Amino acid sequence: MEIIAEGLAFPEGPVVMADGSVIVVELAGGRITRCWNGRAETVCDIGGGPNGAAIGPDGALYVCNNGGLDLEKFQNARGNGHEGRIERVDLATGKFERIYDSCDSVPLQAPNDIVFDADGRIWFTDLGKTHDGIRTASGLFSALTDGSEIFAIDRHAVSYNGVGLSPDGASVYVADTHQARLWHYERRVDQQRPTWVATAPGPVGFDSLAVTQAGNICVATLYDGGISTITPDGTVSKFSISDEAYVTNIAFGGEDMCTAYITLSQSGRLAKMRWDEPGLRLHFNG
Image 1 (tube, one colour):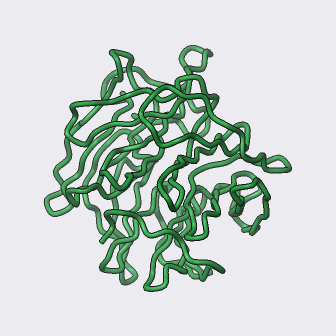
Image 2 (cartoon, helix red, strand yellow):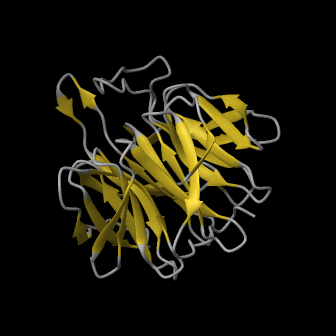
């Protein structure tokens, strides 16, 4: 494993670009950062708690912003820029704008991870937050990039985090942090309840995920850090990263898509390594 950036403030959401750079969000720093050639450059100071990111059909970066979380106490602050939201970032200028902060007049709480389907439609998770000791519901949402439509697929989850699509685009996979479970939805814009795929063994949690060309789901695994690979039929195996408790995300790149970029968030590092199977190429990353 090679460390390609360090000193980052809880990096997440790696986006592998066509030019070989990797864009990450810094959750604890409120920044979007591009890492390349041994250096890190700030794209913009977006504020709040940027949590996940993806390139959209217009070439812009779309960001899930949880509004800011205390990483030790996970306390929630209402208002004053702490609203959960979906934002669009112009990578050429660093200018950002808010696209959504509610669905059906219900505020978003802590948007977490995001993926685009082949039609250019957003699919994103909301992890939920804790208000005065009461935890809000988590869920899966879908939306259009122009701000004209957002839909709640499921508002009855525990703690949804990573989201990804199957190679044929028919399935949406969602990882639940506190349950360490992987769930399956159909890629259709209507209210659904999920089907269970797998649960990770041991005292672990699930974070974000990426899918391989073969359809396996690689889920960043917390506490006993590593990457758990889950086949569509529910078989679980794990690659351990023993020196990092908060392995939070994985993304694939390189000419053969066998380079895995992994965020080691507790230690503030972005790493890369060769993976044993090619990852699925995302629709709009170039």
